[in-house]
Image (cartoon, rainbow, N blue to C red; front, side, top):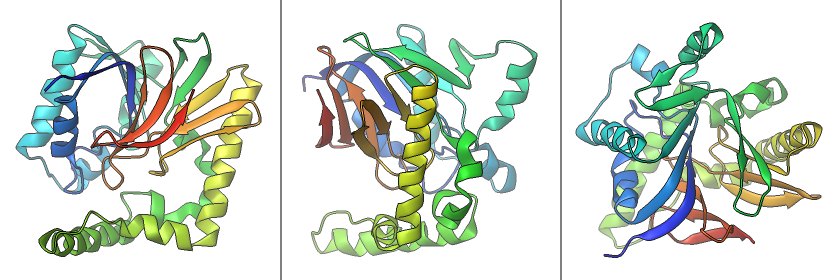
Length: 254
Protein backbone atom coordinates (compact mmCIF):
# COMPACT_ATOMS: atom_id res chain seq x y z
CA UNK A 1 0.00 0.00 0.00
CA UNK A 2 1.34 3.40 -1.01
CA UNK A 3 1.70 5.74 1.96
CA UNK A 4 0.18 9.22 1.96
CA UNK A 5 2.82 11.93 2.40
CA UNK A 6 2.41 14.91 4.71
CA UNK A 7 4.67 17.77 5.65
CA UNK A 8 3.78 17.60 9.35
CA UNK A 9 1.59 15.51 11.65
CA UNK A 10 0.24 16.68 15.02
CA UNK A 11 -1.13 14.31 17.66
CA UNK A 12 -1.95 14.68 21.34
CA UNK A 13 -3.61 12.94 24.28
CA UNK A 14 -2.51 9.42 23.45
CA UNK A 15 -2.39 8.54 27.17
CA UNK A 16 -0.02 5.61 26.94
CA UNK A 17 -0.17 3.79 30.26
CA UNK A 18 -3.98 3.60 30.42
CA UNK A 19 -6.25 0.80 29.27
CA UNK A 20 -8.27 3.37 27.28
CA UNK A 21 -5.39 4.24 24.96
CA UNK A 22 -5.96 3.15 21.34
CA UNK A 23 -2.26 2.54 20.64
CA UNK A 24 -3.04 -0.17 18.11
CA UNK A 25 -5.02 2.26 15.96
CA UNK A 26 -2.12 4.71 15.99
CA UNK A 27 0.25 1.96 14.88
CA UNK A 28 -2.13 1.18 12.02
CA UNK A 29 -2.13 4.86 11.06
CA UNK A 30 1.68 4.98 11.01
CA UNK A 31 1.60 2.22 8.38
CA UNK A 32 -0.47 4.44 6.08
CA UNK A 33 1.35 7.78 6.26
CA UNK A 34 4.75 9.41 5.82
CA UNK A 35 5.79 12.80 7.16
CA UNK A 36 8.77 15.09 7.65
CA UNK A 37 7.79 16.43 11.08
CA UNK A 38 5.96 14.86 14.01
CA UNK A 39 4.67 17.02 16.85
CA UNK A 40 3.47 15.31 20.03
CA UNK A 41 1.30 17.92 21.72
CA UNK A 42 1.04 16.67 25.28
CA UNK A 43 -0.28 13.76 27.34
CA UNK A 44 1.46 11.17 25.21
CA UNK A 45 2.56 9.14 28.23
CA UNK A 46 0.08 9.33 31.11
CA UNK A 47 2.39 9.53 34.12
CA UNK A 48 -0.59 10.31 36.38
CA UNK A 49 -2.15 6.95 35.57
CA UNK A 50 1.10 5.01 35.76
CA UNK A 51 1.73 6.47 39.20
CA UNK A 52 -1.54 5.07 40.57
CA UNK A 53 -2.00 1.85 38.57
CA UNK A 54 0.39 0.32 36.05
CA UNK A 55 -0.96 -0.59 32.63
CA UNK A 56 1.31 -1.20 29.64
CA UNK A 57 0.72 -3.64 26.79
CA UNK A 58 2.88 -4.49 23.78
CA UNK A 59 1.25 -1.87 21.54
CA UNK A 60 2.19 0.85 24.02
CA UNK A 61 5.81 -0.24 23.83
CA UNK A 62 5.67 -0.42 20.03
CA UNK A 63 4.41 3.17 19.81
CA UNK A 64 7.37 4.39 21.88
CA UNK A 65 9.75 2.34 19.74
CA UNK A 66 8.21 3.75 16.56
CA UNK A 67 8.43 7.35 17.74
CA UNK A 68 12.07 6.91 18.80
CA UNK A 69 12.82 5.35 15.42
CA UNK A 70 11.22 8.31 13.66
CA UNK A 71 13.31 10.72 15.72
CA UNK A 72 16.56 9.32 14.31
CA UNK A 73 15.67 10.39 10.77
CA UNK A 74 12.92 12.99 11.11
CA UNK A 75 12.07 16.03 13.17
CA UNK A 76 10.11 14.91 16.26
CA UNK A 77 9.16 17.32 19.06
CA UNK A 78 7.38 16.60 22.33
CA UNK A 79 5.33 19.40 23.89
CA UNK A 80 4.39 18.65 27.48
CA UNK A 81 0.87 18.38 28.87
CA UNK A 82 -0.60 18.03 32.34
CA UNK A 83 -0.42 14.22 32.45
CA UNK A 84 3.30 14.27 31.64
CA UNK A 85 4.09 17.54 33.40
CA UNK A 86 6.63 15.90 35.72
CA UNK A 87 9.13 16.58 32.93
CA UNK A 88 8.54 20.32 33.36
CA UNK A 89 10.64 20.28 36.52
CA UNK A 90 13.56 19.14 34.37
CA UNK A 91 12.88 21.92 31.87
CA UNK A 92 13.23 24.50 34.63
CA UNK A 93 16.82 23.37 35.17
CA UNK A 94 17.98 23.07 31.58
CA UNK A 95 17.10 21.81 28.14
CA UNK A 96 15.90 18.23 28.31
CA UNK A 97 15.61 15.57 25.61
CA UNK A 98 14.05 12.13 25.43
CA UNK A 99 16.52 10.33 23.20
CA UNK A 100 16.71 12.54 20.12
CA UNK A 101 13.39 14.21 20.96
CA UNK A 102 13.50 17.69 22.55
CA UNK A 103 10.84 18.49 25.16
CA UNK A 104 9.28 21.92 25.58
CA UNK A 105 6.21 23.72 26.94
CA UNK A 106 5.34 25.21 23.56
CA UNK A 107 6.71 25.82 20.09
CA UNK A 108 6.12 28.21 17.22
CA UNK A 109 5.68 26.34 13.95
CA UNK A 110 6.06 27.97 10.54
CA UNK A 111 3.70 26.42 8.01
CA UNK A 112 4.40 25.69 4.36
CA UNK A 113 2.50 28.90 3.52
CA UNK A 114 4.57 30.95 5.96
CA UNK A 115 2.07 31.31 8.80
CA UNK A 116 3.20 31.04 12.42
CA UNK A 117 1.22 28.66 14.64
CA UNK A 118 1.52 28.26 18.39
CA UNK A 119 1.77 24.60 19.41
CA UNK A 120 0.68 24.16 23.03
CA UNK A 121 -1.14 21.44 24.97
CA UNK A 122 -3.62 23.84 26.60
CA UNK A 123 -3.66 22.74 30.23
CA UNK A 124 -2.05 26.06 31.10
CA UNK A 125 -5.53 27.55 30.71
CA UNK A 126 -7.25 25.23 33.18
CA UNK A 127 -7.90 28.23 35.42
CA UNK A 128 -10.48 29.26 32.85
CA UNK A 129 -11.96 25.74 32.62
CA UNK A 130 -12.98 24.90 36.17
CA UNK A 131 -16.45 23.89 35.08
CA UNK A 132 -15.25 21.31 32.56
CA UNK A 133 -14.91 18.84 35.44
CA UNK A 134 -15.07 15.10 34.91
CA UNK A 135 -15.42 15.16 31.14
CA UNK A 136 -11.89 16.31 30.44
CA UNK A 137 -9.67 14.80 33.11
CA UNK A 138 -8.65 11.21 32.52
CA UNK A 139 -7.63 10.85 36.15
CA UNK A 140 -11.24 11.34 37.20
CA UNK A 141 -13.07 8.09 38.01
CA UNK A 142 -16.30 9.24 36.41
CA UNK A 143 -14.66 9.67 33.03
CA UNK A 144 -12.97 6.28 33.43
CA UNK A 145 -16.43 4.78 33.97
CA UNK A 146 -17.85 6.51 30.88
CA UNK A 147 -14.98 5.20 28.75
CA UNK A 148 -15.47 1.69 30.16
CA UNK A 149 -19.18 1.67 29.28
CA UNK A 150 -18.33 3.14 25.88
CA UNK A 151 -15.95 0.22 25.27
CA UNK A 152 -18.54 -2.39 26.25
CA UNK A 153 -21.23 -0.71 24.16
CA UNK A 154 -19.05 -0.66 21.06
CA UNK A 155 -18.18 -4.34 21.39
CA UNK A 156 -21.89 -5.04 21.00
CA UNK A 157 -22.14 -2.57 18.12
CA UNK A 158 -19.23 -4.25 16.35
CA UNK A 159 -20.84 -7.67 16.84
CA UNK A 160 -23.97 -6.41 15.07
CA UNK A 161 -21.94 -4.81 12.27
CA UNK A 162 -22.40 -1.21 13.39
CA UNK A 163 -19.69 1.46 13.38
CA UNK A 164 -18.00 2.90 16.45
CA UNK A 165 -20.14 5.39 18.40
CA UNK A 166 -18.80 7.77 21.01
CA UNK A 167 -20.76 7.89 24.27
CA UNK A 168 -18.57 10.63 25.69
CA UNK A 169 -18.94 12.63 22.46
CA UNK A 170 -22.72 12.28 22.73
CA UNK A 171 -22.64 13.49 26.33
CA UNK A 172 -20.52 16.48 25.34
CA UNK A 173 -23.04 17.42 22.67
CA UNK A 174 -25.91 17.29 25.19
CA UNK A 175 -24.36 19.14 28.12
CA UNK A 176 -24.73 22.89 27.54
CA UNK A 177 -22.20 23.80 30.24
CA UNK A 178 -19.54 21.70 28.55
CA UNK A 179 -20.27 23.20 25.14
CA UNK A 180 -20.09 26.71 26.58
CA UNK A 181 -16.74 25.99 28.20
CA UNK A 182 -15.29 24.37 25.08
CA UNK A 183 -16.20 27.54 23.20
CA UNK A 184 -14.66 29.62 25.97
CA UNK A 185 -11.47 27.55 25.84
CA UNK A 186 -11.23 28.13 22.08
CA UNK A 187 -11.77 31.87 22.49
CA UNK A 188 -9.13 32.15 25.21
CA UNK A 189 -6.53 30.33 23.13
CA UNK A 190 -7.34 32.44 20.07
CA UNK A 191 -6.94 35.60 22.15
CA UNK A 192 -3.65 34.26 23.51
CA UNK A 193 -2.48 33.64 19.95
CA UNK A 194 -3.48 37.19 18.97
CA UNK A 195 -1.62 38.63 21.96
CA UNK A 196 1.54 36.81 20.86
CA UNK A 197 1.28 37.84 17.20
CA UNK A 198 0.88 34.39 15.70
CA UNK A 199 -1.63 33.33 13.07
CA UNK A 200 -3.19 30.49 14.99
CA UNK A 201 -2.88 27.67 17.49
CA UNK A 202 -2.81 23.87 17.51
CA UNK A 203 -3.61 22.32 20.90
CA UNK A 204 -5.08 19.29 22.62
CA UNK A 205 -6.16 18.75 26.25
CA UNK A 206 -9.95 18.91 25.87
CA UNK A 207 -10.21 15.71 23.79
CA UNK A 208 -12.48 17.67 21.45
CA UNK A 209 -11.25 17.62 17.83
CA UNK A 210 -11.88 20.92 16.10
CA UNK A 211 -10.71 23.01 13.18
CA UNK A 212 -12.06 26.51 12.69
CA UNK A 213 -11.17 30.14 12.09
CA UNK A 214 -12.23 32.70 14.67
CA UNK A 215 -11.90 36.14 13.14
CA UNK A 216 -8.67 35.81 11.21
CA UNK A 217 -7.08 33.40 13.72
CA UNK A 218 -6.86 29.65 13.16
CA UNK A 219 -7.87 27.30 15.99
CA UNK A 220 -7.12 23.59 15.72
CA UNK A 221 -7.51 20.88 18.35
CA UNK A 222 -6.23 17.45 17.32
CA UNK A 223 -8.55 15.51 19.63
CA UNK A 224 -7.25 12.37 21.35
CA UNK A 225 -6.43 8.67 21.01
CA UNK A 226 -8.79 7.52 23.74
CA UNK A 227 -12.10 8.24 22.06
CA UNK A 228 -12.07 10.20 18.79
CA UNK A 229 -8.70 8.87 17.52
CA UNK A 230 -8.06 11.98 15.43
CA UNK A 231 -5.04 14.01 14.38
CA UNK A 232 -4.06 17.04 12.33
CA UNK A 233 -1.92 16.87 9.21
CA UNK A 234 -0.37 19.54 7.01
CA UNK A 235 -0.12 18.53 3.36
CA UNK A 236 2.95 19.17 1.25
CA UNK A 237 1.15 22.12 -0.37
CA UNK A 238 0.22 23.67 2.99
CA UNK A 239 -3.38 22.60 3.55
CA UNK A 240 -4.40 21.50 7.03
CA UNK A 241 -6.63 18.50 7.60
CA UNK A 242 -8.41 17.15 10.67
CA UNK A 243 -8.52 13.38 10.08
CA UNK A 244 -9.56 10.25 11.94
CA UNK A 245 -7.48 7.08 12.21
CA UNK A 246 -8.97 5.77 8.96
CA UNK A 247 -7.81 8.96 7.20
CA UNK A 248 -11.38 10.17 6.76
CA UNK A 249 -11.54 13.95 6.46
CA UNK A 250 -13.44 15.72 9.23
CA UNK A 251 -12.43 19.29 8.41
CA UNK A 252 -9.97 21.22 6.25
CA UNK A 253 -8.38 24.65 6.12
CA UNK A 254 -6.88 25.71 2.80
